Length: 139
Image (cartoon, rainbow, N blue to C red; front, top):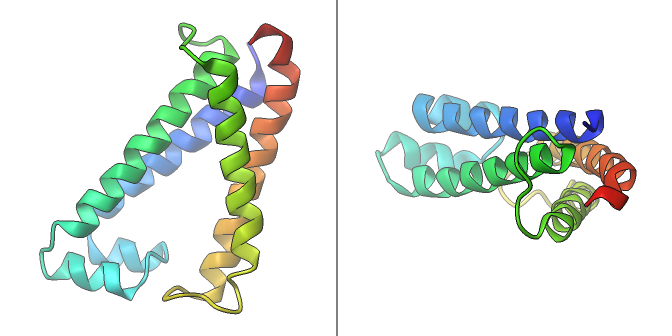
């Protein structure tokens, strides 16, 4: 079992659960986690849009978590495991780096949101990368 990929899977699962919290608790959570005032207002108005968008994010993060656990050897081997882990790692790293360029032009979010979320995504990407590198020959 690969500890880094187990940690990676757990981190994606925790973030998926936090997104479920946004759906359940609504506007205050959307605001706290930096989703933007527009999402918070839509949630307050009872719009289905924040729920749909956030549910999509939950689905993606859950799949990423399952793939990390699969690559770690915790659960059954999933199809296209190597390709999936490469893409997941790349997306986390790309999002982590790209977010730093949005700090000065936040697009409806705070500069702090972009800074913190970028650091988090970059950290997740590095953890995935280390686990992927260690597990490469077994994938």
